[in-house]
Length: 262
Length: 347
Image (cartoon, rainbow over all chains, first blue to last red):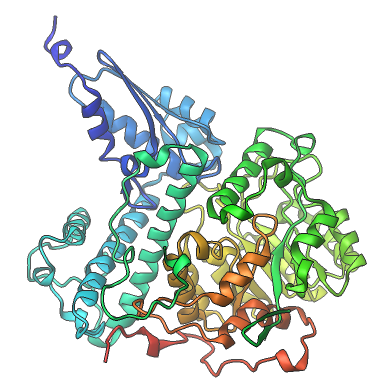
């Protein structure tokens, strides 16, 4: 017996590895989204089935998640063979064949692929940072109503509450982009580190907000559709806490009919 | 017309369809996948009382459409926005002949828009001339994610698409409805990218570009383009039903749209038969942005009137009774429309 055979692979290890795989558009782990349909471990062999909210989810993102899942599970100590299959998608056959053959992106999609998906991935890493930045700053604005959007131009990482999940999420995304993570670093920055002037800050934040609303809204929709398509899938889903989930406490008049608010 | 609390609203549903997704029309598994996807949208976002059985969802026919859309007299006018989907359905998804016949029976209530596809080449240009004459086209619906032989998508900036847009201009087809589905080719880029809308809106300033479901899932890119291009509009199809399932999210979408586009370029759409207009109109009139979302100005009755019908009526020259009309807002042609509402600072 060799040493690798003695390393017993567990389902928990495989799921933890899958937890590092992110849906690029939603910037959330596929495990939190409920996209992992099943995990089967037999000795050193692992079979994973993934599922998506519709048959027509964009195949390039589907490919990224499937191939990232393959890579992540392959890196688990003791794993010798990995099969990742995407279920019920219009390109399931194509993607599953490509993954099984190790054909890569271009080998799988042929004439529909030009170079690589690197730029696509980079676009959504930048959007992920923008949304995380807006979440952290809006949480700050909501906690301190004397702050204005323009004031946030001077806000540094040290001003963010260390124990808020939004702070940690922002720091991880900054690190991934190579942005400084020291307490003196400005929060309101573009993905390349550029800072808006005080006069530009409000509009800069508004643009960032539209990114965050788009990302969060898509995540709501994808979670809901997945649970409609696969009854019970909601029990596999963990939502990202949001500053918008709960109305602020305080003397605000409920402007919505109560049944709509519930 | 819809009346609530003494206020009358002229209602135009800017996006309806008469589709046939029954098994005998499905050409392959994708035909089934497509309607199943629609049905999941319907089940997921509708109030329970509005959910239809699957069999009813596959096909409605003209009589039922008239009942669903116009019963009770709430909707004044509706516009067909058909999807072709010739690779998925034998006779296509949108039923051209049936919808056009219905339009001829009810010309005051219905407008028929048709589609074109640049991949049909020169023949398609001839066909567009014939279609414009036969249907009296004022608008077209373009679905850039439609499959066509080996191709699984196209862009508005494709050279042949420019030929079609030039012909639209010549034929007086001024309303270009764009549905950004998950365009597949090339896979290297974002499938939902709306950047091509930016280019054509700049190059065809005399055409109006209505981006369906307001660019979702790329609301942010759409808003940024629309704020700079005064001939880009937002269709609310798919966004509106969130008013039921996620009212706070809907508040943010409509808040963003009014902030970036202003109140004159947002169009009510039920996307029938995905959803029916009645409950959406009722909910929208009752809706208000929660007060704690202080970054958005409240929705005024004027904004609701414009969104529900006046904006679409203007694009399509649909006659509106004098007493229900409103003037355009005094807003800049480009740039954010409601910068005063942008400040979270509270007094």
